Length: 129
Image 1 (cartoon, rainbow, N blue to C red):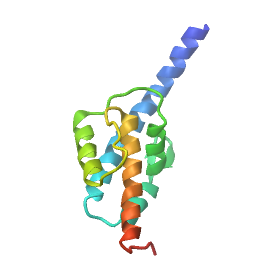
Image 2 (image 1 turned 90 degrees about the horizontal axis):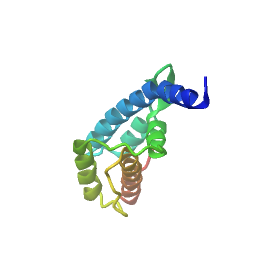
Image 3 (image 1 turned 120 degrees about the vertical axis):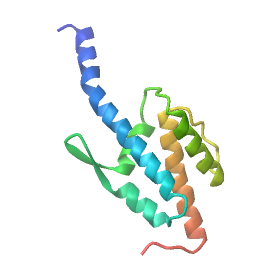
Image 4 (image 1 turned 45 degrees about the vertical axis):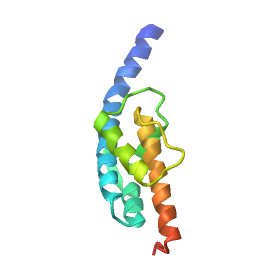
């Protein structure tokens, strides 16, 4: 097998994992945005620290967000997801306002939102027990 064919084979082997990673990410983003509407920051932390199966392994949801955040490929996020994340990010006054076109932009925004929500909770006297 020459070097070009080996590169294509490796890329194809990674593809199913990437597809399942993006699928898991979409579900995490949907639930995160729903939970961020009114729940305590501890609920969001517990959710992100929970594990999900991806292939034959388990990963924390936070690790999946970080993996998408570190993606090197420029994969456009679905417009509906971009809009929902933009609206929540704007309502939380996340600064600097992230660009929200790519999946990695969305992951970065979700991670920033969690920090802002946690900061607001501490400022309001909420503590984790």
